[in-house]
Image 1 (tube, rainbow, N blue to C red):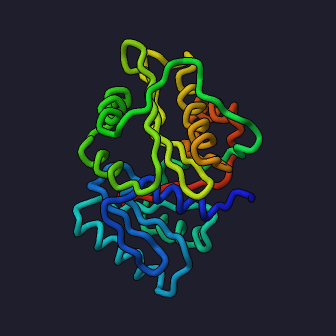
Image 2: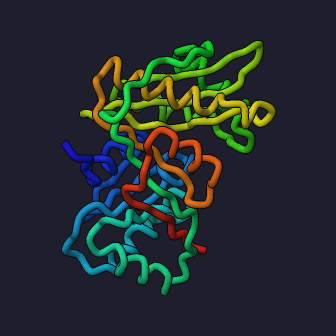
Length: 246
């Protein structure tokens, strides 16, 4: 089995669900009280039949009705994405946060749980740790609702050595394990804790579900994270970026 780009995109959408979703002529309109752009943006998935300008105007109306910024998330592989990107640019939408979706073939290595002590937690125990370490994130209530809405199997990993050190989330779907919310406390970075979290989640995917591939999303300018993930065989599959109305 080879990694399927569209399947990875759909798995990632399922792994980070919006609280409300509209399907409109091949596009998904996702709403989650503004918590993360991923869960609060328009995602084109399939070619539609309606005029492009009408579709954009409809999306603008729906987000304005919810008093949210109008955001489009544009996967590079989707047919017609270049035309949509150009139309949004012409309308003054700002280009933001180019992101690389990476994939690792888990058939190339057998992962075991790291020697360093780790903990598998329930979401309500894991979430406060995440927000403590990920400085700048707010709205833990909406984050909790997003986590509760995940319908596929999950694994919440944390490393605790007298204090909260690092954590991450794994979500499994149909041969793929997605890695999300990987964070290390600022005072404990560059000490291998991030590697331990990734290794633990990959081992979970292999041991429990015999996963074929792992995927993750990383900002294109995040050199430290790209370096970390390359050690686990992650390579670029596709990219996405945002257009935000200003």
